[in-house]
Amino acid sequence: MDAEDWHAHRAETALMLAIAPELVDLTAAKVADDPDRTAGLVFRYAVGQVSQTGVTGRPSEATVELGERLWADVVAAAREVVARARVERPPLG
Image 1: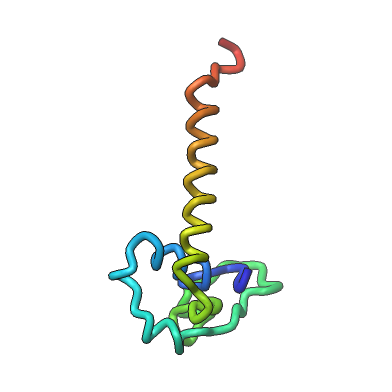
Image 2 (image 1 turned 90 degrees about the vertical axis):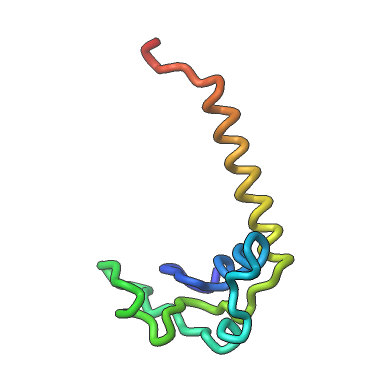
């Protein structure tokens, strides 16, 4: 993982490259890396309070291949939840 409290980092950018590449500005992503400054903080802060670029992490490392793998994981997890939900019954009937 390239950021604990992430916004537009490697994974998020890679997912967008896989599902909506027209929305990704690769030129901007290549120079937008900004370190995660949230380690050890108690509170969460708006991105503008922890990032100089609007990014937390390394979008420059995003690839379509990573995005496709991550998307496959997301879809598999969603399928598993839906399959469980279809047969679930209330604990007390």
